[in-house]
Length: 73
Image (tube, rainbow, N blue to C red; front, side, top):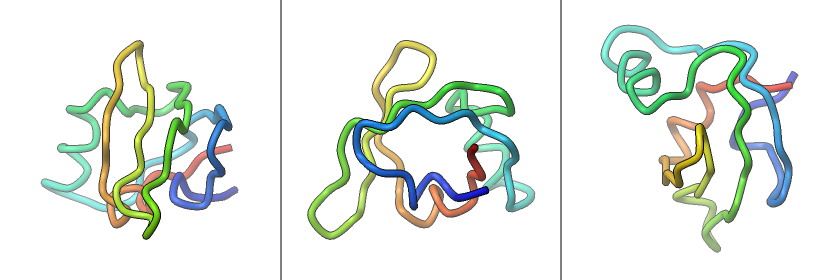
């Protein structure tokens, strides 16, 4: 398993698990990123932060530190 941060541009992955706890996990889930959700990595900024993804039909930019807490397969 790898994290969303390690996913390459153009890949579509499925969320396997969310790490982190409390407010961090709640914020990620509020964005629509939950277990079993397909996530397409659209772009990664030159320095790796932020990561632009498409999830549930909308575009979203998330921090690299948040992407490390999303395990995908």
